[in-house]
Image 1 (cartoon, rainbow, N blue to C red):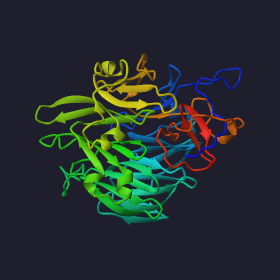
Image 2 (image 1 turned 30 degrees about the horizontal axis):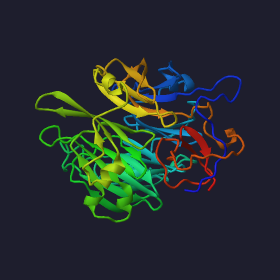
Image 3 (image 1 turned 135 degrees about the vertical axis):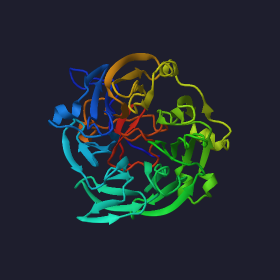
Image 4 (image 1 turned 90 degrees about the vertical axis):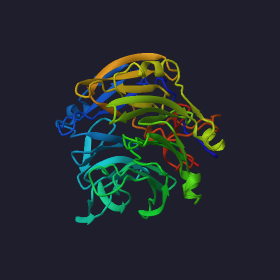
Length: 429
């Protein structure tokens, strides 16, 4: 890519007489299902600033069971609040902007910066004041300037993880209600043309119940399958979005690994890190696995390389001491590692922090079931271009480019702010 830069704000650099914050993190605490006690933790530079950040900023509760959070653009964040049937929009300062209740039973989020895409287990959606019904689940498209649903498309039963890549949406279908409804588990990834909101193709992975948040590393996705909790074992699907767009056969679009990837993230080099939680109804016990996956190496070697059971420094040692691991995240600005422990699921959880080399930095008390993460820019700004100094020359054009969500970007859009080597820059062309 031929990329010109406007200046770049290095991590830790002081833009004024007072140094700006390096680590700024929002954590969604799910609370207890049906207790309407979801909360937001705000963490900054080794300190929990608040474990009820949304309420303190807005004077009312967040809602029941928040289960995803994304950066839509420089000034807007979206939060999916499942049991409250709300997609809540806030500023990076925590102020509520708007909310839509038109997407019931919402699950996970993706964005192209202009629209927010949300998966839903529901069977109806409100578009322009009229209700559209679906037999299975669907993906809704919300205009981030009006906060209105402008379109929707049916996918599989109980769709979960969703990602945006080069004009397409990739949706992992679970069929998770198979045990109580009259349908089977799903095994597919729906590929949607985001402009037209039509299904371009459906890739069959052969693996049931593609459940949970999935991480994205450029063209690759890390998708978890917990199996059926009885006889079908958990697995990890590493999915190649580029191959799916190019029309390659289903079997060439993914690799299946014999590990779970219940909680997963991507580091600054594009590697996936996953904590796998396998539960068995036969034994009533959890078993865990821990993997690092280099997706490029995995596909180059036809699935025979690229998987290691290793994390940096003491990250893995500390995670293995947890009562109940509940999330893992790498800050896309700094490379710092974070993980959460839900403990009993009914009382306060913990946040653990390491630097980019895996050196333990601290353990902090959160609220109930801390599960979902979003890093804010480290300079105290929202990432707008007005905060970026005059143009300078740089020599790091070969390094990976990340969005403000920590997703590798292969085709940057002119006029947007991206991250490279822990620094922000405005992509010109």
